[in-house]
Image (cartoon, rainbow, N blue to C red; front, side, top):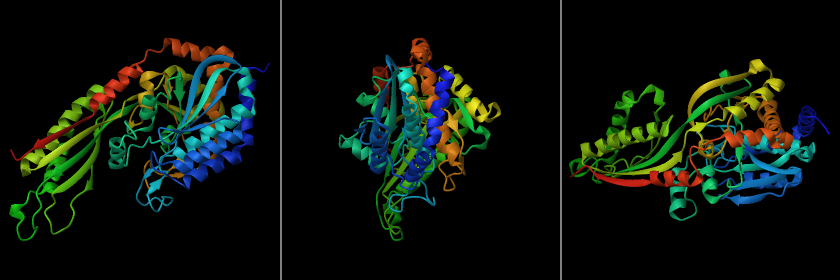
Length: 444
C-alpha cells in the first residue's frame, strides 16, 4: 500500500510521461477556437481523448459539455474537476478564427489540457485503486458570456434557458451527483506569480438594450425623426455620470458596448442596440447598481422622446472560494512550484460562472501562470507551456488525491462543514427571478 506522498509522486510522474500529449491537446484547441455552446470540434477532441485514457465519456451536455467519471475502490464523495471549452471574440488576435473571430485569449485551452492531463495522471498511476469516491472530469461550455443576441435567440427557441454553461448544466441536473468542484484558470497577471488564490470574484447581471426611434432623412428632414443613437449616447453618458455613486467596496463594473448603431448614414437611426454587464461583489450590490443603470438608460429615451426596451438576463453569481480546499491547493503548489511562487489575494473584479457552483457546493477556482499579454486581449499567448498545461494537470490531480485519500476524509470534512448559500432550487428560483423585459416610452 503506497503512502499518499508515494501516490502523488506516481501521479506526477505519469503526467510527465504524457507531457507531450498534454501540450498537443492544449495547442490543438488554441489553434481551433470556438465560441460558447458552439464548441463542437473541441468537445469531440475531449471525448476522443477521454476514451483513449479509458474513460467512458458522455457528451452533448448543455449542447457541448463532456463528462467522464472514474470510480475509486470504495464509495464516497464525488469531486468534479472542470475545464472550460470556449473562446471569445477578440479583434486582432493572431490566432483568431477568421470566420467567427473566436480566440483563446483567456486560456481555456490550457484548462482543458490540464483537465485531461489530470485524468491521464490519475488513471496512469492507477490512483483510483487507493481512493474512495469518484472524480468527474467535466469539460463545460460557454463560460464567456458573449454572443448574447445569438444566445437569447437560442433561449427563445427553447434550446437553452440559462445563457452560461455551468448555470445551464446545474439546471439540467448534471451537477446533482457532485459534492465539490474545482478548476484552475490560466492567467498572465505577473503579480499572481506561478499560482494564486483569490478570496472572491464579482458576479454579474447581463442586459440587452434597444433604443427605438423614428427613421427620417438625416439631411433633409432630421426634425421628423427620433434619433435612437443620440438617445443611446445620453443613456451611456448617464451611466458614466452615476459611476461615482457606486461604493468602492462593492466593486461595481458597468461596461456597455453598442452592437448596432444605425442602418445607413443618411437615415436617422431608429434602432440602436447595446449590451452590458452590471458586475458587483455581492448580489445586493449588483441589484442596487442594476436599478441605477436602468434609470440612466431611461434618461436617454426621455431626452429624445424615444422608446427603450431593457432586457435583464441572469448572469453569474459572485464566486466564493472555499478556504479549506484552498489550503490543500496552496500546500501542493508550494511543494512543486516553491512557496514564494504561490500568492493569496482578496477580491477580483472579473466574473465567472464558477461563482454559481460556489453557492451550492464547496468550490475552488485558483489561478496559475504560463500566459503572457493581457486577459481577453489580442496579445494574450501561452508563454510557458509547461506551467500553463502540465502544472495545472498535476495540481488538479493532487487535489483529487488529497480529497479522496484515507476513505475521502478531507472531502467528507469539507462537505459536512459546508453551508450552501443557496440550494439548487433556491438558485434556480433566484436566477429566473432576475429575467425581465421593460419597455419605457420617453415620448409620453
